[in-house]
Length: 114
Length: 117
Image (cartoon, rainbow over all chains, first blue to last red; front, side, top):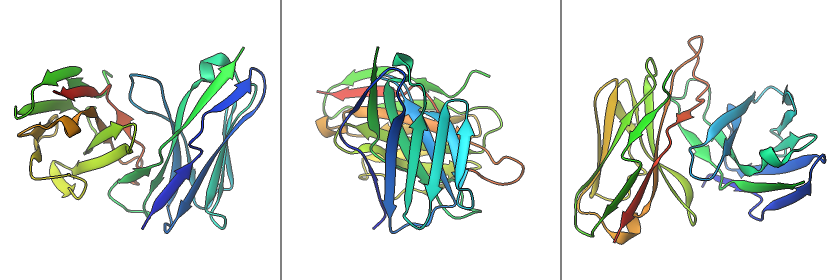
């Protein structure tokens, strides 16, 4: 069955360092992979999308890589700040033309300490 | 844009009671999703609609759960009868194709925190 794995343990880093979060998947060939941020008591918020034919995507301090051979995505936050503390979810979507269903990972909680 | 609107934000009820959760998607979005989130199971898709038509309800846990979308601007998720194990945060999300291609990016509401005693 389809499975998505994210670091279950919280990631604690010092302000200014680069945070790297991992998303691995099995038994799936997604057309897109997305990353969302979720703060306590709020719904997930979309951050970045990367397509299966893209290796890397950047947005300000965020960078996402997508390796379809390894079936893995890495999410980087450079020059991290305490305000980046949140839970980050990866989500996989189906083949192009799919009706829109996403499968979410459990999420990794990031804590950035000043 | 007001974003996805959900009501109520919090609901406390007793076992056996009927619960109705409501969602208004973003105007112009043609897909609507209902999720349930718990610490143990994470974010689970319950059901989703395209153009008001239910497409996949395989995530609906039991017949006690039902969802409707009578028009493009309103959807309900009903639990009858409710049980303590239904306690969770329920999210509604919506999306739309961009440039004719669905990238499946979803916009979530604030959620309804349901507690069944």
